Amino acid sequence: MVGAALSLYFVKPVVWNTRGYLRPSGAKFGSGYPAETGFGVEEWNNSPRLTLADGGELKHVFHTEGFGNQPLDEAAGEVFVFMVASHLGKQYLVAIAGRTTSLFTNRRERHRLFDKIKERSHFPKEAWELSTVRKAHGNNYTKLLSRWKKERDWFVTWICPADHYLGLSQRVELKAQEITGRRRLVSMYGAYQEIDRLQAVRILDRIPEGEDQYILANLKDACGHANTDIVTDLRGLDLKSRVKPTTRLALIDARLGQGSFRRQLEYLWGGKCVVTGCSVPELLRASHVKPWRSSSNKERLDPKNGLLLTAHLDALFDSGLITFDDNGVIVRSSRLSDDGDPRLHLDCGISAPLPNETKEYLRHHREKVFRR
Image 1 (cartoon, rainbow, N blue to C red):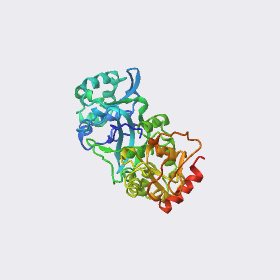
Image 2: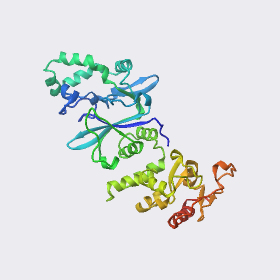
Image 3: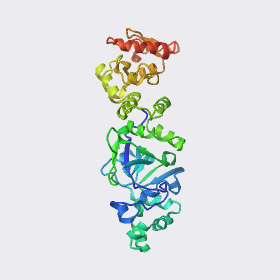
Image 4: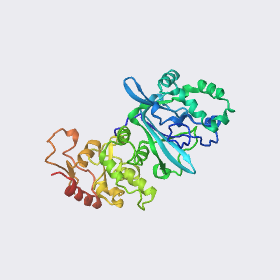
């Protein structure tokens, strides 16, 4: 895994906006701060004015509501925020920030960064253009300015590298069942939903080609999704096919070596590497024998088409530098240097008998993948 151990991934609701989150748009709000003021602070989040030079680097600052008691400070630089807005019963991804650092507990830093924002004096004027804002403040601009001066330190609650902030030019509809297996993502402004890395990857895979591919690549890399083979394989999984959402979810998990596919492999092989006997979950990979991209959907989910291997054996097997004969003995490629270190277990083999189905998959691996 490439992602850091302390990484946190969140879906965070933001208010609905029809101006690309470049300035407030006057949407109707039912509760909370937006209902009181007629606008949401996050409605400026995608504005280029929030990109600034700081410490010799380009950074982007933005706003969301709070995250309760989450250990955000401990995960500084390793938080991913997926901003989602709800409209007419659907939920849309509107922005993503990666490698972010929370500023909720650092008032001085919030104040310093706010003062660096370009044309910050225009923000209350832009809000005042909306009838919702004028109504909320009794047509008294001085009242708005007084509130703004008092609360402006909360304009900036996050900071991240500018090349890890993606404000989408087109909203992307998210279907919760395809991402988390549940009917709906969190929708209340004051709430949030923690997701895992694999669910974050699923969201990133839904970003269309028209968006900034450089920033998207940075986000995928930071999210532990740098393997271009995985990106290519998952992109090839037809979103418009008749595959059920739950099946598609299982197929993605299987390609990532997770989910039901991994659990079945752990059961089949006793939770241990089939060669070394290692039982440390963090060191084990759920490897397809017949590559995922070459398999049918049925074969992709078949635990007999899998081996539980330690990370170094998985890398060698996946690249075709080793394979196994029908007795489970390791066969080395001539391209693999002769390293006699016994800790690599290259002179060993699979200790348990192989199912006949696995032998068939191994035959494909020897003929199509193995680099003799």
